[in-house]
Length: 423
Image 1 (spheres, rainbow, N blue to C red):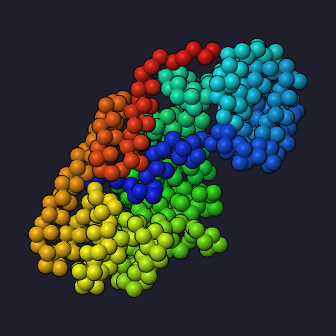
Image 2: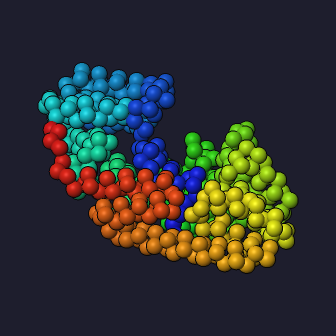
């Protein structure tokens, strides 16, 4: 395996907790406000056969961010004497709106039901809500205990698998995250989100054939998903890594033509790279020039401009953009390697030797970085290896990945602490 180094534009989304919150779980208070919490109200049958059936419908209402329907169900449950079930739904609504601590307090004070509701189902709901609230508060031992208890009783609980996928992903425990994501994808066959996140993970670890399969399945499940343009760009990026340039171009052509910013510079750079690969250097140069007009220090554009000059047989012309790229991004291996090629072509052998030597030094760092990723993969409970990854990311001028691994180390450390009492 080569060094898992995602593009600078995608890296913050690939591993940040915001990604998991946005893709895999409900987005908390921000998502609730954005959705309006109630604008798509779908009336729930208050005469459902049992209080548990009504509570299940209310649970689904929270899933679809239909706050009005959920509140209607809470009132109906109270009217039917199912105060405990009503409290669980209310607690889940609080969690979804970003109020996890009050949700835990509410669960701790739940009254007994008078309806004969199935105790096992009620306990499952309580544990799921407590697990999600604890996860959002970073009370990982409590979250893990509650969610594993759910799976012990109900192995096919999609909610428990989804939450455990998010939690293990945060800690950089990738094999466990993949296991729970695969279960989530299997149990929710219409949901595009777990497949999209699986695509991101495999892309991150440079397992591009698997990434392509997951991205394509995500798009098959929901061709018009909210993040469709992002998924298409990420899919195209994986296809480029596999040298499937014409397929990547066809994928980029599916971007929303009505959205002038669809894909942004990431899509344009991928398109230019594909055009260069199939021999259309003029079209590739036109795209690169447009990007550099507005983003003169863009690393990808500078690197591509140098590559085009090299292919045009103009190594001296390639030196200028590549030197700018090295000056702005001194620890980027590819731009340094391209600069060595340009120096050699221009007859500057001493400069070429120095550039090659520095490129090899950076390559060795990246190899060590890749080995540490494998170590982190194999040791999900090791915070020290995650801190070493953060330090090395800083050495490689990757503050985005430095933050990712610092957060993963913190998540592992939090998982070692005793769970707070919240009952």
